[in-house]
Image (cartoon, rainbow, N blue to C red; front, side):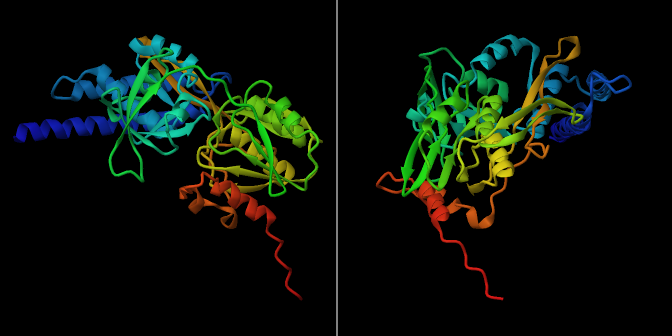
Length: 394
């Protein structure tokens, strides 16, 4: 009994040591540059990591599998860095890259992991996941009979990027349900929905479900002839998509510098400009915790460039690009965030976009009206139509 406890304690010590050392190195990786002479290469830190791993294995009283330690430690560190960093072991790189090309085009489901828990970050409207009833914030506890806690993020992504027609069985935990839900997701290709426009109680409502090639033209066509005083742009549940097209949409509303892409050293890699002129009235944006990437770019640019009011919930907090790094000696691949998009002031979009307290609609997100109405949208319109507060007489 004592021997088992000792082995368990030593194993815990090794794992914690690995996570600590790699955590320090990972911070340096994000700040390292491969381009400037005299700057430490990222591979220096990977080599350091391998040396630490060798020393720990040599000092450990019982044989420990190096590959297992490497995989476990890297999984833990990438999980802690951000939701889009991932480690893929060498034997799985080829199949992962094939799945990455598909992305969520067969499911419409964006599943991320945080502290080992897999959860639904966003659901594309009109996708197989939407039709199957998935909701934002669902916890995915099982995938095809296996615990999601045992699956690294790369494997979760691969499971959801299977061939068209395949059936993915998931167990979902939902806050308002007492028991887990068994959901069958049949993978299929689907078309991204175009922007839609309608007037609600005198307010123009532009819904943008996704950002891809042509979205800016669709937005301009949808708003043709609208001359109302207020426009509400609904970006709830919009995650990922083409950031360049989000800047293109923003450029129809905002004139001048919109922002760009900067690397780890804040060097500008891309910049975007707009001509503006599409709409002259007041603009508001409706977002939630699923609004991520391209949606956050449009939100930030309209907020800074047009003074748009923001309603709903704080956004997800990530508009970046990842790069794949080949580990030496066939150690696999790391995907790490290498650059972030910025707003017109040059600020990185790597944290949640905040919503003023009086413009938050948190309680309405949990409402379940029986008539099928949209309480969050109606709440935002209520705020827009509120008469301005009277100035105090001085």
